[in-house]
Amino acid sequence: MKFNKAVEKLKKSEVYKNWKKNHPEGYLVSSFVTADKEIGEWQIGFYSEKHDKITLFKIGKKITKDPEEDVLKKKQKVPKLNIKNIKVELDEILKKAELFQKKKYSQYPPVKKLIVVQNYDGKDVWNITYFTQSLKTLNMKFDASDGKLIDDGLIELFNFS
Image 1 (spheres, rainbow, N blue to C red):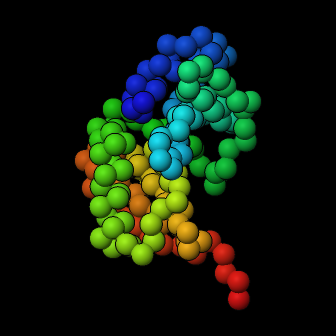
Image 2 (tube, helix red, strand yellow):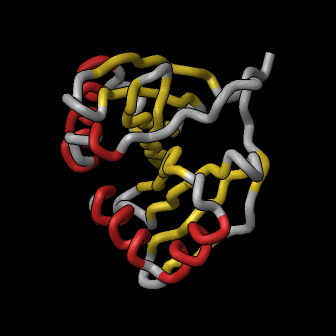
């Protein structure tokens, strides 16, 4: 399911409407999904400034809501994700990420992918992380409005020395 469709489906659900009644100031902050051969279920996060908590909604055949969680932040406002800025859908970003990985990091093929759409440094981005067989992660950030690669890096998960 495309991200924008998942958000639409969520906002029409009774689960979300009931949450919104008690959190009228709440706003969209991020969403993530995992993928190996197929894309998993979207998990969409909304932040309540009043409660200083994030609530995750899982979008599958049935929409469910997790309990509120504390926010990992550095004494700043949790940035809002503006869905209007997400003009490039996930399928196109995944194609770009795959081409980039094969060109620059071909020796690190992905085993699993973590895909996050979020506001990062004031910009709405697709944040793609590939977990590789060599215990390294490849992270790529793409601008959600035009699909351009903003940043990339390879990180070693474990150092055994």
